[in-house]
Image 1 (cartoon, rainbow, N blue to C red):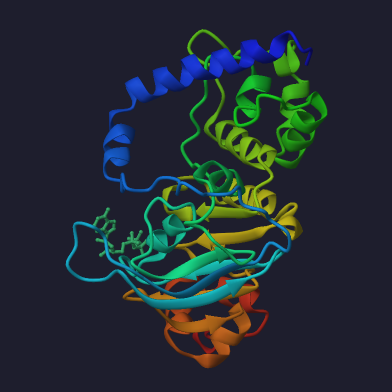
Image 2 (cartoon, rainbow, N blue to C red):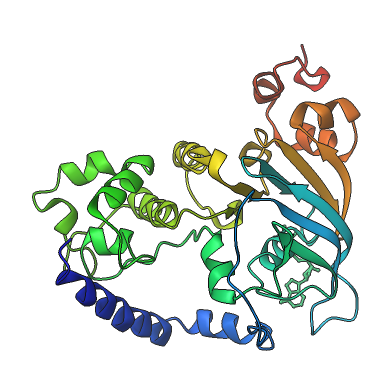
Length: 309
Ligand code: ATP
């Protein structure tokens, strides 16, 4: 990209983001639901990520509109390179926990720190640069593939865009297009399949090189093959960050380093997949419920009694 192109990309994104806000009524309502008190403190400093340690310290949270607490006294530590899975029944607080990290809401008690810095003491811009929630519904702008991938970073270099596309398994497809990265997508441009759009989102996320990556499988209306590819992509470069997977399906988090099983906003079991199966508690029961017998055998590496073998 030449220096002359950079302001054009920035301007394009500004116009597009206005158009997006104006057309997405639900998003506006979702935004209105957020706590407007969340702003920078007068003395807020940019977040400095060194070791990449995310810590929840006795965190409790009550929604402004709710009388009862959603999260109660929750503590855990996640280190750079670790993948933490959150699972539990509907309403147990998984998404809420994930949304506290980029400060969509502020904790009611306790604190969340990244490398020892309370996330309420750092600038929101630096926090949200470091903490990225993977968007499932890929919104593509009517502009080039390159601009769509580099959406979060107006100063992105072509090599970075190519690397992110390769990790998201898009590079091969883009190579087949006559205009390559300059191909315009959208209304009058090339239309992409659902899977390709999803991979565009992943490429976009990888461009941001987040320190904390949050992936919520709840809105992932994709087939098993695509889900497998997305998971593989999420795991790419996982050593450089903390990955949090909010999961409804065990498949999404079985390979996490640590799984937190939640109930009513509290951790009631935690450990690796194998450790939790050995505990034979709530996680193991969910496992028996969700997996087909042949999957139980493959997934755990052992023969589960419920597999009928
Ligand atoms: P699911 O598996 O259904 O996605 P979850 O475990 O992710 O659920 P949350 O979405 O975190 O659970 O919700 C936890 C509780 O907080 C639920 O009782 C829910 O109704 C409530 N809740 C969620 N969002 C809000 C909100 N914006 N305002 C008030 N209460 C909310």
